[in-house]
Each structure stands twice: as structure tokens, then as C-alpha cells.
Amino acid sequence: MTLMAIAAIAMTAAMPMQAKKKATKATTQVVYTGDIAKKVIGYNGTTPLNITIKKGKIEKIEALPNQEGPAYMQRATKKVFAQYEGLTVAEALKLKPDVATGATYTSEALIKNIQMGLQQAGGKVKADKKSNKKVAKKRKH
Image (cartoon, rainbow, N blue to C red):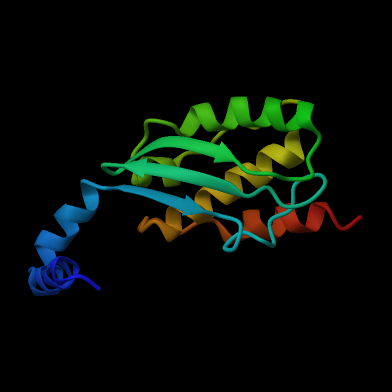
């Protein structure tokens, strides 16, 4: 570890708590939902995402490799992601988004992934636990 890296760590540790929060809001954070939402199932399996949050707002949501049909995934991502991008984390957690017609299971899984990812990012609004069970139960038939 270089002397400069050690100095940066020491300065960060010595910063008051409020200064740390302000520094965090000015940065870009990418939340990977593959681990935290591994029980959320779309039509054919999990639908992991990367959610990019910059200065407290959702800048971009990216679908990662999955087993969903490409046409369904494209329809669902286009409809669902557009509803979230540009919102603050708090606004997004309160959102009641629409699903894409013809890609309901995939849409519901994407929405739940986004909610769980935003909670991981530090959202203070609790997600609806019923919606997670609902999505998981639908795929057991």
C-alpha cells in the first residue's frame, strides 16, 4: 500500500459522519442485484441487474445475462426501466410501476430486483414483502 493510499484512508476515517454522507451522495454507486435477489424469479429464472445511482438519482439500470426470452426481456426492460430512471432512490421505492403487457412475470421480477437493489443502496422505505412471495409463488406451478 502506498503512503498516499494510507493517508487517504486515515483522512476518510477521521472525517465527521456528516461529511462522509455528503461525500457518498456525490459519488456514483452501482448496485448488483444478483446476490440479494437470487430468490426473485421471472418466467425462466433470475433476472440480475446493475443499478447505477449518481448523486442520489437512478442514472441507469442494466439487465445482466439471464434465461428470459430476449423478446420478453426487451419488452419488460423498456417499459420498467424508463419508469425508474431519473428518480431519487426514495421516489423510486415509493413508485407503483406498470408491468409490460405480455411480459408480466419478467416485469414483476425486474421491479422486485430494482426495489431490493435500492434498499441495498440505502433506501429508507421498506419494500413490500408480499410482492416478493407473490413473484416466487407464481413460478412454482
